[in-house]
Figure 1 (cartoon, rainbow, N blue to C red):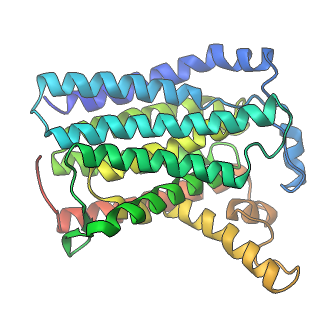
Figure 2: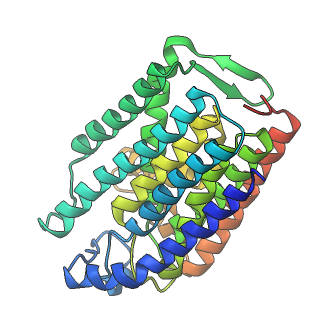
Length: 338
């Protein structure tokens, strides 16, 4: 019976996110919250100029509301979870919302203040590290340990190094997810499949509260894709992409398995490193490019791949990597149950 809340969370989050689009998209058009397409992207993306942005509110509202309600109901009707695990779930959801707020500020500056680049890189990093530190301090106050799971090794206590490494890891993943948002349906699809596999892993390990949390995110992403799949009628904006990054980190940390994001979120990481490699190579070679364009999804676009093909192939890649992560956990579980 405990799994029923996972199903309810997924279905309800999907329904709410999809239904919100009926109202939100016309509202965003009415207040002229349209996307500005920068000149450094593919030229054919100029046709998307003015498409409503900040559509991430669809899955933010659905996954947060449904996630919190269903987790609470599970805690009331199901097997009680430890105080630390409960804190990880609720603090994680709050962290995701905080990252969404940072993204909203960035989007607001771009759209309303007409500054194409939004917040400066330094401003973003200060705010992002502030959110990560607040999250980690909250967990420490609830008695969380400094141990993390290493595949085929077990739980490893990182001691004092846990906190700086975790903060850097969270900010890195959040920005990697942000970079993945560049073509219709890509970020939502990759995150949908990643969260589905996190849901399966959490269910196998008996952490049903985390499974419910993952299901709410998966449902929200799928509901958003109703409106965001090519040709997109709305974009998620930094509001949505930073929220997704924060939520994926929250799920991984609630399982004590942030390292799983290296496999489940490998698309995010490839997107991030494609940018780092492109910039580094460009500077070292005084103007030569390693990829036709970065992030790497734009490279495939420049190679002639359609947006739909990129989304399908990246989603398949994410599913394969996530399945490997699931198999790895089944073969060598760090714990089963709370």
